[in-house]
Image (tube, rainbow, N blue to C red; front, side):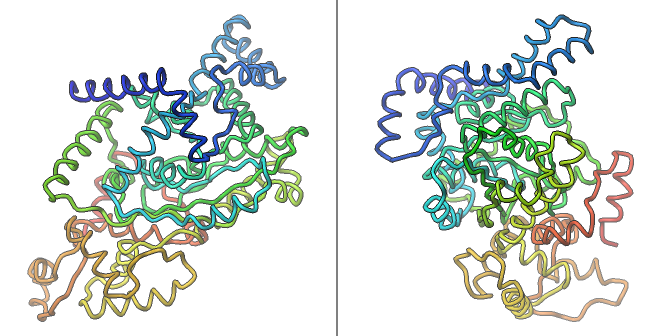
Length: 491
């Protein structure tokens, strides 16, 4: 823990020096690179945000309701509301974002993965978009690395303000994320006053054209497939259009991410079975830094191998103005009236993300092993070729083109993690009751002890429509974990 505190303190000191001495240099850097930064993010004080938020009728009523329900004075309720707002509002710093955040994000992502970003759609959108349009990137959520990956892909175009969950509200990450333009969201906090403040803040920055990034699923997928979209943040953003003075176009950019390896995959699949993570936020952060520190030194001695692909692609932009003209109820003052149209919009966004979701070698091979438990190299190449033809409409952004190259790329990652094994390693255990198995040369199967991960990566390529028809699995209670685990373990 001491190493963690020293490292965090050093990072904080560096950032403070950047804040004090680097403002002029940061502005010169911004002009030289022609980087677009939302002017509303550059205000040193938040007087304008506070004026807009607390001057609204909704917040005045929410404060009065809080005071009545909690038996406190209106002034105490207003003080609590200001505390919520201060917690949410970021403190964007150009130098911290572009001189610290960008190089660190680039170094981390390229150290861990082979990063591929489909930048052409963003360039085309920026070229034809109306000046002053507000843009929100809506992203599927696979890993906590998504924050770094998506921000890294957009450094050259825009500074992105993220809606960040409570996991990052630990020192010094809470300060760092705010300097990078992020704002915190308490996803399971039910206090009406807090959500009134959050809603008004999101509407305010949307009206002022601040480019945002939100994860519509709300949290990380536990089974690898798409999760049921959450409507809260989407509602806050769309409701900004109820203001008649907000005449600028509002666009949603569906953004799809996929990985050959999700760093948290084992923890996520175990949570699906009901095993609860008992580590504190500080312990989780310390483990992350320890992992990166050890991996860095392994890399110095050429012992570290990257985890395959991390890919970002984009769906077709969705105009909220056009959607609202066709579905007017989405701007209704009544939540019950606008909820069906919000669900329709969420389904449209998720379908676009699903169509844009990139294929990776590992997810493709995992889906093959679900259908064919044992495959020779020759049979695997044939199956990959079949999927390559069948999935011709999917996003293929891989450097590898032939089935042989794709199988080699997947096998490097899967063998490194011991997720696939040669058949002869398990023949005696699996087939002893059948008198043994005939000799098969160059045959592979998924490690029988890791079938949860096989399904996790195979599910990543399920379409949103298929997942919706299947239904979304509920996390099991802890008492049900042993029974569920027994069902997942091969006989």
